[in-house]
Length: 153
Image (cartoon, rainbow, N blue to C red; front, side, top):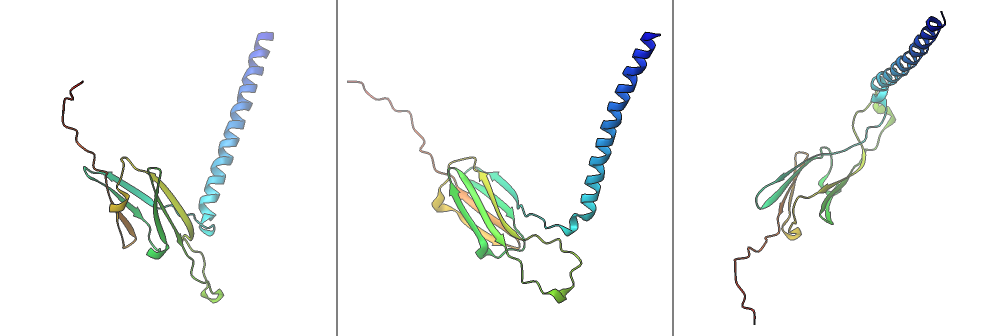
């Protein structure tokens, strides 16, 4: 009889643990669903999408940065990294415009992209058109060392 009571007690404890896990999971899902439902009213952060291609002599970088003026984009290099920064400025909002909600992102952003090779910083070509920042970065030309024997004296 004592073994039966013990087994029943263990079963009850395990059931309680699973109920707590179930409650925690339900609570998590509920918060996620509520956030998804109402996050249209929260400001979104902006994080440009980046594409880096390593070609034979150049590195091609494309960044999706729609809705920004090219004068508000800054491109720099530091310790083998490409840094793209900018700010999407919010137009002055007027009360009478009657916004229900806005999904547009505003604010500053910064992306640091490690480059796969040494680059020639003086040969960078940058173009910004239709929301796409295009960079063509030449790699440093390495000297090809031919085999040469040196006489030891």
